[in-house]
Image 1: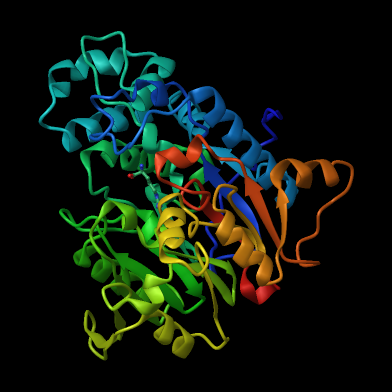
Image 2 (image 1 turned 180 degrees about the vertical axis):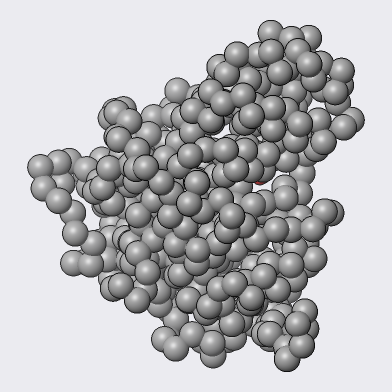
Length: 425
Ligand SMILES: NC(=[NH2+])NCCC[C@H](N)C(=O)O
């Protein structure tokens, strides 16, 4: 199994995502570590895990995914690890202090305040381990962060701006602090750290709910995790600072299986998406409020659209094809949606990664002209040559038997910071 040899990291981050599925340039990931071994039968539900994972296999599967991204992007430093950036930044005293202060503010119910002074004495590696696993040499034990591997939910990039998540659950609120500290203190983010879309206290937003349908069309799920207040705050600021002209707030059933919009809908290429069929044919899904900018500051014009798919076809000037997750039968649609069949990640237009176990979804992709290939075969085929996206449509299968038990797919495990702009294609 390939192990990642850390490639040289670029000097600075760029935020640039104008359309989902454009060729990937820079992506933030987190390969699971010891924090995953701290999920136990008794705490798993609080930690948002349906089961406990075997770390060894989960890591191997994740590292294979990273190797795949490096091969497709083929540029040094395309894949950035949260854990490495955090260890870098904790070498700075001000970053450590900021992390501790934010921790005390966000979790006032714990006894962190009482050991604030001792926390400030921790070595960078000790604080790093506290941040990820909750373990430290102090008489203090915080919950681990096993969901950090779903880096998608930490933030979202809209053109040259970033929205940092306000997690809906206590289990994930420390992840947003990590992202804030990286952004504000890591030299890598120096050039972009001021381009933040800020959210008011009290609203909740997680990155898995945000999808860039086109340079001027943004989709945000109104889900179990993202509140309408957050959608309005984001809409207001993207209208002001980016080329976005339409925000669609997409209503989703507030339940675990559909926790984020990307659990039921993802783009495979600019004109193809993989969708859980009820989103297209069941009125309890996909009802969208269409927001555009009003004539006065802070005003929106809204209209109601009963079906996400129809409104998307209206707004983006290309015909969208909906590839059904799970094939024609509802039982398989539901089974494969639960194991993230609709959560594919596009590394480039028409080059997507999904979990192998979603067989019927891959069958549908094959019917739509995708060549289906395993990650291992892809890598060995291109071992000595360069892969150039665009020659054919590819659906790459990742074994993911362990990772998929964390209830997140390849899109959830990636936070693209930069993609080639549609205008440069
Ligand atoms: N973007 C996503 N769909 N992320 C999935 C996150 C899964 C994670 N266990 C949670 O419940 O939070």
